[in-house]
Amino acid sequence: MDQRQSHLLYSRFTVAGDDGAFKSPMARRLLAYWRDKAGDRRRPAWTDLNLMDVYGIAPNIMVRDPVDGGRDFRCRFCGTALVSVLGMDPTGKLLDECYAPEGRDMMLARYHLVLSADAPVRVVGYVRVVEKNLPTGFECVILPVSGADGGIGHVMMVLDFAYDPEEDEVPKPGLS
Picture 1 (cartoon, rainbow, N blue to C red):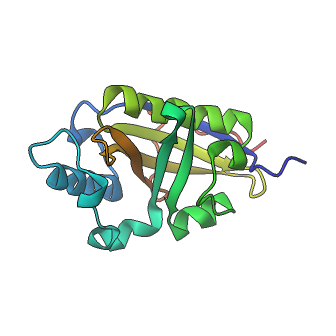
Picture 2: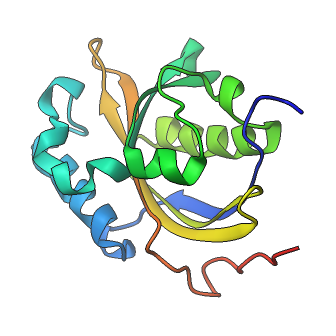
């Protein structure tokens, strides 16, 4: 079998119209921190951020850096709670090195929306880890962060696996 993780992803994602769209305390906390650090700017710079400022949610945070204009993304940081759910540590690796094509393509679509909209993106859905054979619900906020050149150099996100999506947000996948 391929060395990449095999995930089936059921989710919906959209540019967040307003901060009230987020229900997860983790998503709201990271979004408030991001907005505070951005100040009058469209987004904060990577140098403005310190994961120790959001220590309580850091285990659920991931940071990825676009490679070749967003053709792929390299994982800069992956919190321990995410490693536990994923069953692997993607730190330092490209999406192509970690995930099966359907999972990689879904993540690329989410990250491309962040790059093109240059705004927070809300994701709600399920990660179904085949080895566990359980759908795991989540809400996520994905945020653009400026790099050294002032453009989007990173996407930062928090995934709250305590969030149970409502049926009208995304249907729960079957266990088959």
